[in-house]
Image (tube, rainbow over all chains, first blue to last red; front, side, top):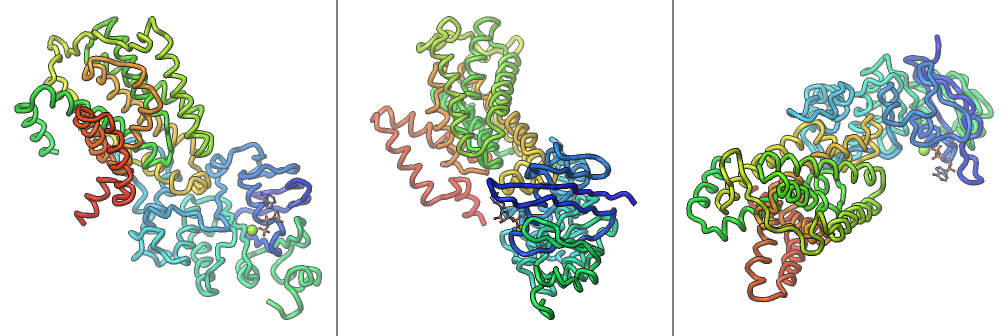
Amino acid sequence: MTPILALNGITKRFGAFTALDDVGFTIRPGEAVGLIGPNGAGKTTLFNIITGFLRADAGSVRFADRTIDTVAPARRVALGLARTFQTAMVFPGLTARENIAMAVRRRAGDGLRWFGGASGTDAASRLLDDAGLAHRADTLLRDMSHGERRIVDALMPLALSPRVLLLDEPTAGLTRAEGERLLDILRRQHAGTALLLVAHDVDIVLGHCDRVVVMELGRVIRIGTPAEVRDDAEVRRAYLGSPGGC
Amino acid sequence: MIRVIAAAAVVALFADDYLLRFLAEILLFGVAVMSLDILIGFGGLMSLGHAALFGGAAYAAAIVARQWGGDLVLMLGTGMATGLVLAAVMGVVVLRSGQLFLLIMTLLLAQMLWEVAFHWRDVTGGADGLRGLPALSLGPWALSGARALFLVAVPLAVVAFLVARSFIAAPIGRALVGTREEPIRMTALGYSLFAVRFRAMMVAGAMAGAAGALLPFVNQYVGPQSVHWTLSATLVIMLVIGGIGSLWGGFIGSAVYLGIQTYLSAYTDRWQLLVGLVFVLTVLLLPNGVAGGVRRWRS
Ligand SMILES: Nc1ncnc2c1ncn2[C@@H]1O[C@H](COP(=O)(O)OP(=O)(O)O)[C@@H](O)[C@H]1O
Ligand SMILES: [Mg+2]
C-alpha cells in the first residue's frame, strides 16, 4: 500500500544545533505509528515540520502522494493532516461543545459563514457523549480539569476526520487509566485515521501502535514492531533504560 | 427592542434640538465604538487607527455631498465603501503581524490619513475642515433638522447592532473569537487567521463608515481631528468605559464620554481630567465596563 505520509531526509537546524538529522519514515493509511525518544530527541520539531509550523532545512514531506513542503499549515489541515500540541491548545473562554463545533464547522466547510447561527453543535455533542463528557458539554474549558481539557484537545482535530492525526504527548499529565481511555476513544472513533503518537509512557505507545519509530538526538535509531523495539538492545540502552525498566 | 423604539419615539417628540443633535452624535459614535469592539473585544485585535475608518468616511461623505448633494442612500453608500476600502488597506498591511506591531501600524496608517486631510486643502479644507454642507435628504424629503437626524441615527444604530450581533453569533464570529482565544489552534484546525480577521475588519469598516458618513451632518462640520489618532484613542476609551466584548456597551461609553465632554466643557476646560478619572474608576471597579457591571448585577 502506498504510504499516506512519507518523510524523507528531514533536517532541521537551530543555529549551529542540529535538531533533526536526515529523518525519514512512512505511515500507511490507517496505521498507528508510535514515536518515542528522550526529551530533546526532536519529536515536537518533527511534528512542526510535518504540519508546516516550521520549515525544514532539507528533506521533504509527502502527503497522499503530493509534496507539501510549501503548503501553509491551514491548507495542510484541509488536505487531511491534523494535530495536537504538546500543551493543550483549547479555547478557554468557550464551552467544550463550542470548542469542538469549531472543528466540525471547519470540516463541513462552514467555518466562515456570515449569516445564521453557528452549526456543528449536534456533531460536537455526539463526540463529547462518546468520550463520556456529555455532562460537561456546556462547561467552559477554563473551568475543566486538566484531564478533561486534554480529551477536548484531542477531540478537536479528531472532529476534522483527518487522514493522519499527529498526537504530541496527548497523555501527558493524565493518569495511566485516563491515558488509556483517551487512546481508546481515539482509536474507536476513527479506525481509518492514521496516527502518529508521541507519548512518554512507553507502554501506552507499545500497546496501541502497529509500529514504533525510536529517535535519539535528532536521528531515527530504530523502526520496528512494538515487540522488536522492546527487545532491541540499542533502544534499551538509549531510551528504555536498564532491562526491566519502564 | 420595542422598548428602544418606544423610548426613541418619546425622545424624538419631546427633546429639544440641542439634545436631539447630541443624542444623534452619541449614537453615531456608539456605532463606531461597537465596530471597534468587534476588532478588540471579539478579535483581540488592538487597533489605534479606528478613527481613520470613522473619520475617513465622514470626509468622503462630506466631499461627495458638496458635489452631488446629501442623499442619505448616497451618503451611507459612500461611507460604507470608504470604510471598507480603508479597512481593507489596513487589514492587508497589519493583520499578518503581532500585537504590538498591529497597534503601531494602525496608528501610523491612520496618521497618514490625517496628513492627507490636513494638507490637501483643496479637497479637505485643510486645518479648517469642511463646512456648509447641503442638508441630508431621502428622496424628496429633507432631513435637515435635529429631529430628522436623530430619527436617522436611531435605525442606523439599531440595524448596526443587529448586524454586529448576528455577525458574532454566525460561524465567522465564532471563528473570530477562536482566533482571539487560541490562534495557533485555529490554524491547526485549518482556519486561515488572515481570512477570519480580514472579514472582521471589513464588517467593522463598513459599520464605522456608515456611522461616519452621517457625522458631518450632525456636527455640520468635518475637520482633521476626526481622523486624528487622539480620536482613535477616544474610541478605545469609550469602549473600555462601556464594556469590551458587549457590543451595546459602545453606546454607553460614547454617552458617558460625550456627556462629560459636552456638559462639563461649558464649566471647565479640565473635563478630560474627569474622563480620566471615570476611565480609571471603570478599570478598577468595573473591569468589564458598565455593560459588564450591568450583566453582573442582573445575574
Ligand atoms: N525554536 C527552537 N529554537 C532552538 N532550539 C530548539 C527550538 N525548538 C526546539 N529546539 C531544540 O531542539 C531539540 C529538540 O526539541 P523537541 O523537538 O522539542 O524535542 P522533543 O519533542 O523530542 O522533546 C531540543 O534540544 C530543543 O531544545
Ligand atoms: Mg516534545
